[in-house]
Length: 617
Image (cartoon, rainbow, N blue to C red; front, top):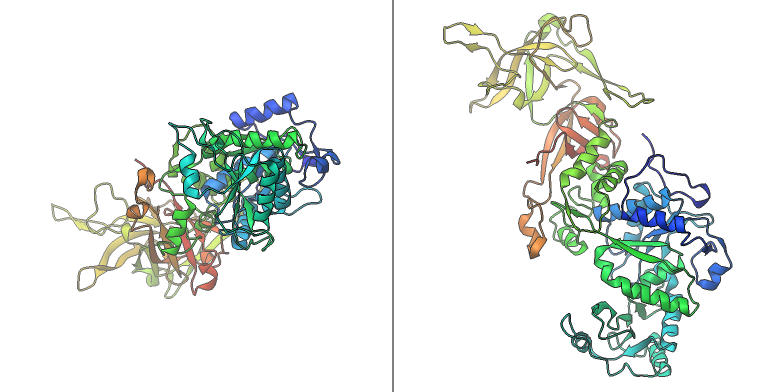
């Protein structure tokens, strides 16, 4: 199984092996490379201000992108798209993608999420390491510079301390139909503002009592440019800086600075940040003018976020599912989190394929969930070992077995693990036995078969009084058998199916084709079958857009999103390693559970995806 490509290092950047589908981001990057937009940049080996970078060498990375999650929750499928996009572009254009924790909000962030994010990015197959620096970056490491930048803006007359209440600021900001009103504190001198800001820093004022605002234009048609807040007082212990700070930068102020310190060239984010781009550019211009940051500064580009049917990606709503026990944790296989998708059986390659297949656009649209499932099927088709599993078992008794094969005889059988292995791959052979009793699916026997039914049916009496023999089928990998009837309990439920084995018809022997069978069915021997817990997962929501238009997403929870059954699996599946994927022949793709498969008393398998789209129209 091939290893997913990792983030290319600048010194060893290679051209992509295959032409990637073009999109507007690739066109922008190719244009910038052709024009040499960022060719003069220098890189000192670590993030830093203009003076720090000027002392460095010409940047060996042709472009720099970044994936900057806030460590306040578990990453989901939308983040997976962004990871593949940013790391993929850096890889394809001889660049580097930075992993950066945007940890400017100490009240919601935790090292648990930091560790989970690192694990998820690595699992997806990407690497952010650079020569001499293997650690991810953290926005909180730049707090000193951000404070320095804020003081510069104050001294240059571009920022002021506002002591209005939050409600007063909201009212005075205006709306789309009327301009804002200047704060009564806007006319303070730089010296007055600087003194007040330092009081904020030194903890002399209460949380929420004042903020530092950029001084731009209270009449701007873009409300985000009406003197946005850039620092607030917030007494909270930070997971990285502890209690050093009681003031913290706002995201819209911190994010552009983080990009600039890291010499990012193409800052790629989703469309909801489009209205923030003018402030991004304003801030970059001011700090470059002051000589604090290198030129040319980064530029922000926006693409449409992922809207996937039957899925919600709001961190708040996902947290509600977890904490209200609607699901069994962040890694529940029904969750769209990366840890949940991994436990469901999704592979890094399937998520990379999904990200590439849906592409990037500037307009919002919905992607059908079946597209994601199709990518997993495509990836597992040539990788997942095959195996027999009976999910709804009924015993099949071969009534003449002892007479024909010998009492207690168990006949060895084999099947390939991969019917069509990829070139250069040698797959092991599966070994199991057939004896007098085997397990089959209940649906493989019908007393009164529907039209077109080709599996096991008992003998029947015809209208003319003659009797037709029971159906003849092959036990796949074993013998051809002829159905002779069934046994029932007092309530009329079928407890056993009866058949007789036809000698000398074993698969792979010269007599295998001597008797024509209508169908081949899967089975597991009673002698060596293994009991397993199988979790049949389905979509968590029955509504394609469960939270659209203000709907209560909890009302569309699918009550049948999980069914737990006891199945019988062939002996090769009992030795499955956690996270190993299989195709249960005729049923779908399954994965050995990463947690309960190890800790339980019997194997546990999760349904990853069926062999075909059962939700298709």
